[in-house]
Amino acid sequence: MASMPRAVDRLIDALSRLPGIGPKTASRLTYHLLRAGEEEAAVLAEAVAALHRQTIMCSRCCNISETDPCAICTDDRRDHQTICVVEEPLDVVAIENTGNFHGLYHVLHGHISPMERIGPDELRIEPLLARVREDGIREIILATNPTLEGDATAIYISRLAQPYGVSVTRLALGLPRGGDLEYADRMTLSEALAGRRLI
Amino acid sequence: MPRPRVRRTEAIVLRERDYAEADRILTLLTPGGKVTVMAKGVRRPTSRKTGHLGLFNRAEIMLAQGRNMDLVTQAQALEVFEELWHDLLRFTYACYAAELVDRFVPEDEGSSDLYDLLVSALRWFSTGDDLRLWCRYFELSLLRQTGYAPSLHRCVVCEGDLQAETNYFDLAQGGLACPRCGMQIPGARPVSLSAQKVLRYLDSRDMASVGMLSLRESSQREIETLMHAVLQYTLERELKSTAFLRRLRSELAMREASRQKPEGSAKPPVFDDQPDSA
Image 1 (cartoon, rainbow over the protein chains, first blue to last red):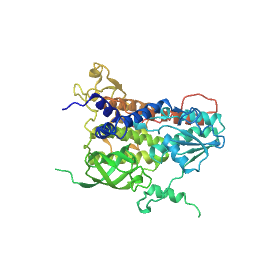
Image 2 (cartoon, rainbow over the protein chains, first blue to last red; image 1 turned 120 degrees about the vertical axis):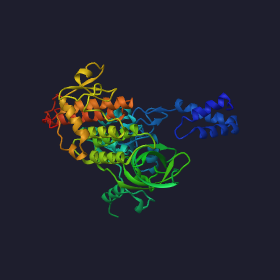
Image 3 (cartoon, rainbow over the protein chains, first blue to last red; image 1 turned 90 degrees about the vertical axis):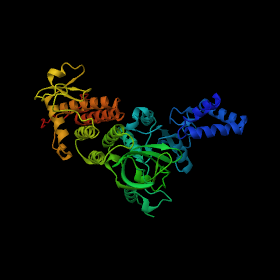
Image 4 (cartoon, chains in turn blue, purple; image 1 turned 90 degrees about the horizontal axis):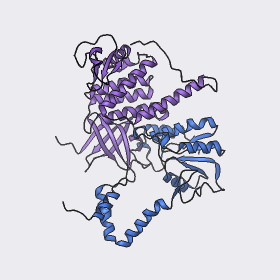
């Protein structure tokens, strides 16, 4: 087998460690960067290098940020008594894009998954409870994914938060916009029926 | 015989892994064996397959032959074990059962009996009582169906009939040894007579009989410890879900104890102590 230059081999190896990228895609990306020229490769290299240098985890909400505390946690116009709990930093972006939530966030960085050996200690649950204890939180909105593991995480957190007398809510479940009723599963339809409202 | 390009099968979703933008790689147990398939776009809320292909759902699916793995083209949930969504302990037992099946069954292997066993287990973990005892029944049945059934009636060394006394379990030979042979085997663990009776009962009866059994906490614990050792030895690794299962059970026991005791009491949890009926 013809050997590749070491630099090419190293980049293919590094790229194929990324989620969703196999050796074939990694090779294609590597050769694209070779063809694109040194400048484009340098821009990418600088962006990758700056990723960890210029970001930090907010010590309050555990979101990825440029400052600690992050801009959301220090924004006085936001409701500091409501926390929306999400699994990943990208979920914060999704909820912020709605423009309808003005409280604070807490990022767990995953969900409980016994089969992957991810328990409560691997998630940022304790910092959340510390905020509930110390910051006068009145409502926790559990916005974990509507999956079996997301629900398990929500149940676990709600049980821990119970003694603090805080109101714990879960995002509504039901039919997605643009979906097709006949393809909805029984559980989703039941939840949609249970959560129906007057128009 | 070549696999058909498109096939219809029933399946249980054993595990799932996010892939690319909105896809998921699913490990399924079907009556024909364990398969790994790709469900395209299933993480989008508007996907027609999303709700049907949830973890542990029993679904009827259409699979089309793909380049690297089969693709799910249609899915219809046949049974959703709803209690697993509302009860953390039941969910964790289901995870444990699914992990066991995933570890014991290689890709493209399995049988309709194994599939039926998992369906029964999920039904039991979803709605049944005494989840611990049923878990032991599941473990023994799984070992039997995958060819690792422990020998419980004759000594694994001298092949003599075992007497009604404390015998020894040898993990390497996968069964009980009489005291004379067992005491010579390094690491062989003593098994009480009542634990042996329970193991034989669970190994020889149908699942309906499991509910008729009522065990002391000490017997439950002895059998559980032994079965975990057998499984760990057979699989050559520890199961990932065991740690969380233990933690959850101990948290629930502590919570139960604090509910029963006056505030400030720090005594350990109290367990039932019913007579051993085995």
